[in-house]
Amino acid sequence: MLMRFLKAIWRWIGIRGLILVFVLLVCGLLLTFNLVLRPKMIAGFFAGQTAPAVAVSTVEVKPTTWTPEIDAIGTLWAFQGVDVASETAGIVKTIAFKANERIDKGQLLVQLDDAVESADLMSAQAALARDRSQLERAKSLRASGVNSQATLQEAESSLAASESVLAKVQAVLNQKSIEAPFAGTIGIPRIDDGQYIQAGTVIATLQQLDKMKVDFTVPEQQVGQLKIGQPAKFGLTDADFAYDGRIIGIDPKIDPQTRLVSVRAEVDNPNAELRPGQFVRVRVGLPPIEDVIALPQTSVVTSLYGDYVYVVEPQATEAAAQGSDAAASAGADAKPSASEQSEALVARQVFVHTGRRQGDLVQIESGVSAGQTVVTSGQNKLANNSPVTINNAANPAAVASDGGDKP
Image 1 (cartoon, rainbow, N blue to C red):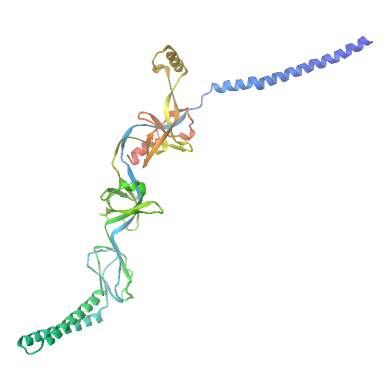
Image 2: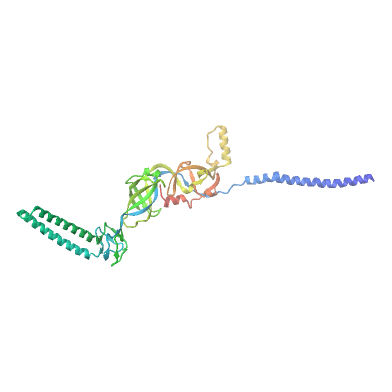
């Protein structure tokens, strides 16, 4: 009876023990797979994978002659320009000009009613003739000894007073005739025939447009590069600087608020295309600099750590690397042959120091050298040592060299 009971207990423990061992074995296998085998398999899988090559456009670094320029924004003014105004009050009798008409210096623009002044002029002329005759008579009598020296002096004083009155009346009469102070283009009349105007009323604007003045400002650091007579170019857009001029004035004072210096230039305007008050772009050329590295601005990436570019270089194969290691260990100073090198290309990140910017180009002071190939577009998809392929079908560098400003 006892033996049967013990056998039953052993049978019950043995079955559950086998089940327990089996469960523990399965759990151990799962843990081993997930913690050991699976990471190794994943790492091995990705170790054999290569990142897809990124298509980029590039430009070859070449030294060039850099012509630095100072760019500024200016405002156009007429070389001579005034608002012609009346010096005296009166009724407009005649408007002798039309809008946008070419006016000569001294040409009559507006005639005010001068009937009263003309009558005063006739009276003054008659008084002058009378006093002149009296002076001649006094001189004759004085020569004969009939009258005194005081009578002669009185006659001379009367003549001088009459001449003064005549000059005054003539001046008032001249104010009734408003003439052009210089040759130029007259604007739209601001008065009408028969209108009574006060002294100071603007008749029209008169602008001399053959030459224009351009006022612009430059930073205080650049004022030392400017001088009187220095040539400059002007344009209404960034792409066309069609007007030539020169600097005629540099303000000796620097604005303490903006740290800018005011500069004035003159520019020829033969076709009267430039107008006073118009916005204009200014470009002042500086002496050229030889052997300068200049790249398209699209090739330079700005970050918190500085400016950098991506330089495209060939990627060596493992066989070439082993060959170079073997040569190094053997003491040989030989380079891998062309057959040992891979055709794959990688983009290497290189930090650079930039200088002046001009148009679509930026000066590179250090970081790259002539002969290297630099990425000009597609940098947002790159990391250091990323594989790349070159596709210059739409190269910003080519666009800059064809349509942009050349250094």
